[in-house]
Length: 106
Image (cartoon, rainbow, N blue to C red; front, side, top):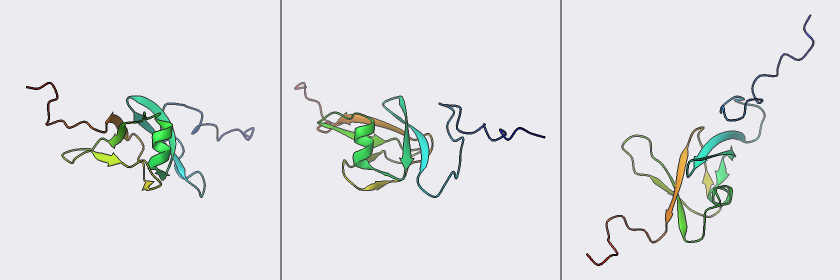
């Protein structure tokens, strides 16, 4: 007979990600990365919650890296729902940044 402690595998490995699919009726917690730092977040969440979680500084925007050929997605700092996938990568960039413009006068 087992000692009743068989279900210890799933949530006990921090950093492994995806250990416990469907663990209840509410939000699922997923592992994401913001500026190369690992975080856990419920999914779905809001853009404002992601800005707080990633400590996004004033004057910066949060972007989700696109997989494949698509454009990266800007995340609004508001109550808009954001559905996260395990392993999503986000990064911050200055709000006024225009990759096609140069500000050094040349």
